[in-house]
Amino acid sequence: MTARFFPLALLAAAALVSCRGHSLRTSVSWVAPSNEAVEDADLSEEAAPALLVDAAGGLWKRAYPSSDVPGDGAGSPGEPVEPRGGSVAQLSSRLFSYRLEKGERSGPPPHQETARTARYIAHNSDWGHLATISTQGKIKGLPFGNIFSVSDGPLDNSTGVIYFYVTPMDYTVIDLKSDPHASLTFSEAEGQFCRQRVYDPEDPRCARLTLTGKMVEVASQELEFAKQAMFSRHPVMAKWPVGHKWFFMKMELMQVWLQDWIGGVSLIPLEDYFKATLL
Image (cartoon, rainbow, N blue to C red; front, side, top):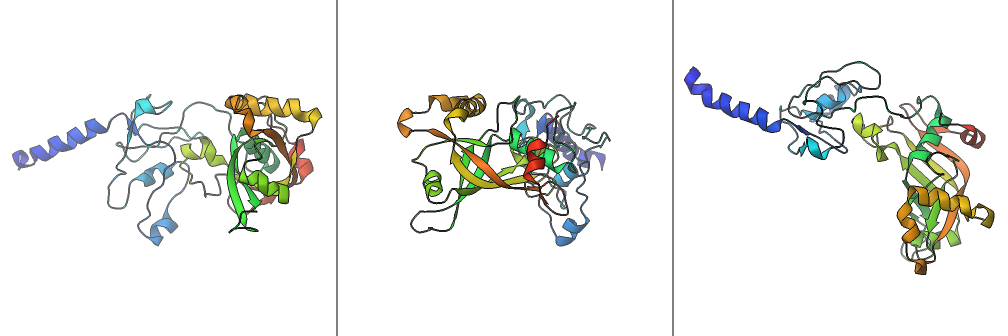
């Protein structure tokens, strides 16, 4: 019997060796085989990586060399990791793991501090989704969304005011000439926080922020700061072709909408939003 099963053991050992040094990266999802699995699943920060193993015992097929993942490869898959709460969890799979980054990092404020969380997201987002009322033929009067690079100031100077660098050739800018009101949405999924915790972008714990207001052209006395804000965060913009007649805009806020935890959303008073600090 021992000789009969020896080749299988050899194959299993080879599979284990070939998988060392690999890890999953970027956003991760998993398939729930039934509604019961969804209801009973432990979605805690410690247990979530174990859900990468499906009900049939199979593992997600794709993996990437640890050398391709910044900060990875320092430890073997399956080693204990320390989430933000400080508790140690042993990942269930030694073949594939979503290893949480070790060491202290400046992260988001506690979710109860909604104004600070909103400012944190606004400052740490390099781009967002801007929705306008379209003037385009077939969708005139309907919502139209577009991606824009943004900045609320240089990295060391958060203002909470969102600046844009746009061209009049853009459909969104054409829309704004007809109706200057817009909504700008950010997701914490842009950074590493949600990825490290295997939070889906729609998970309420992966915060999303929507700023609604009126888009206006930046006044001459504010132009220098707007330029510093945008070009310090997006230096390539300074070399964009002048023929496109780029100019600076900002959003004059009317509403700050935030969801950063399970159980509801927050409408943050503008005064609280602008008074909040990131420290």
